[in-house]
Length: 251
Image (cartoon, rainbow, N blue to C red):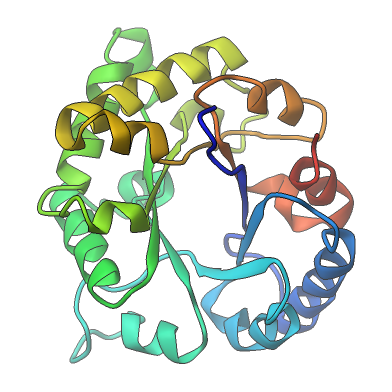
């Protein structure tokens, strides 16, 4: 996989009180102490200040699950990039399928967030992926290409190093269904080709593309063995140390 570092991220979604988040973070610090990959956890906004000090100085980075498209101002209920940075957040997940399809965020809004995060020195995990009906209509590649191209509009070659792509087939999130390693790798290869057309072959070789969609301890190694799959964005299995650690520490 061309010297790319495996990157395993846990998206805790809307789960965990602060006490529960602290307990999980402590267990992950212990369980991943000798891990050789890159790691991240993304708690709810309410737990960022709790989890930050527990993982600070370890091999686990702190991520947020979303952020506002504006720096500050009259945006009731939103959380700004400045507030996230103040809590020690290093990475933000943008364009997650739940944000796109449940909360109706479009490519233009997601792109605005991507550029704002990069401007402030945050790493971005940009999520792309198709719905079941789009896959069945033979449009999976086209959908992922559009989301990638529009999500990265105006992102300079120099800023691309702050971008990770996560491919999450929407039909495989929280459903127990997983794309076969071959299906997943085919889309990863396609997206890598899109990056190549936009930024050149060297950039395509370097970019990390995670798989997200019902990753579990028993399928992680098979997925990671594929040429174009460079890690995982883990949802449900990230909520317990005894399921996340085996995924994160796969060999």
